[in-house]
Amino acid sequence: MPRTACTLALALTLARASTAGAGTVVVHSGESIQTAVDAAPAGTTIRVEPGTYHEAGDTRAVTVTKEGIRLVGAARPGRPVVLEQSGTQTQGIWVSPADSLAPADVELPPCGVSGMRLVGFQLSGFTVRGFDGFGVYLACVDRFRLERNETHANLTYAMFPVRSSQGRLTRNKASGTHSDACLYTGQDENILVDHNEATDCQIGLQIENSQHVRMTHNRAAGNTAGIVVDVIDGRQAKIASDNSVTHNELRDNNRPNTAPPGGETSSLPPGIGLVLDGADRTLVAGNLIAGNDLAGLTLVDFCLGDPEACMHPLDIDPHPDMNRVVGNRFEDNETDVILLLGTGQGNCFAHNRPKSLDAQLPSCR
Image (tube, rainbow, N blue to C red; front, side, top):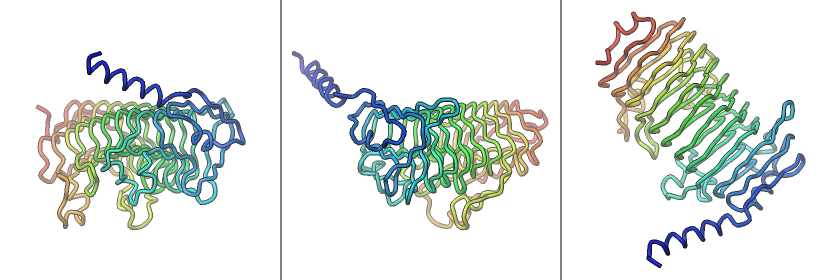
């Protein structure tokens, strides 16, 4: 047999062996989701029946370190599948390689340096609530899907994939963060975020230090800020570029800032629909941006937004370049657009409504 054929045959054999025995396991109300995860081989679907689940972990309610696990909540009308904080837990559902279960900084997971990855994770049909840290945390996970979940009163982040790729967050509902974003993509690549709803959060949806994230057909209403696309220093990934924010509704994002004093978002002023902070080559198109009491959109140089951080050497380019704002509708904002570009280049506006807006701003040629 040719060497390439032998290699392929061996790879297929190993793949089959790694998922041997994988199938579907059912967890009934009163049983443990974590016990089912621990016993499941890679590739297992774990179907969770309606009920309210309190798991025994000290820090994390449910921990997944295996590939291909699918957690499927079999929710029915009036009968949700609820994972609720218990005891000293600060994290709800935690998915990462084994080397990243206790990072010193959750935004700098060890797997982001070691190269350890998980492939294939799905979460659907769950309600996750009441955790002080994260409702759902993913680190270094490729080909994931978070679909039709609800995350409420998770105080820091609701859903947080970091250093992950080729994923999708779709048709989720999130509310009630106090200090950061409901639906977050950080240091990620090739993520689709679509048809979600974020309300009553510090930030509704966020793209941070990521590339090729598509954020489309979402609704962000009643948050402190609707959507933030930004680059920040001190992360493993150093750029925010080639992302898109299209066909979203960003309405009435005027909630008072609830971050604790000194927190990263404590200086975020309420009343902004969309913030572009130091990001490059963002397409902003076809959005409705309405009823925001400070500004519909702000496009700002990182150093103008955070001058104290720029008193020290940076490991990022802080200047926003080549962002395109086209075909959006601005209604009833205190100010539709605020530009604080610093030395940012090539940012432009075209075909927005009201038409008079474009006449005051750099045009797209």
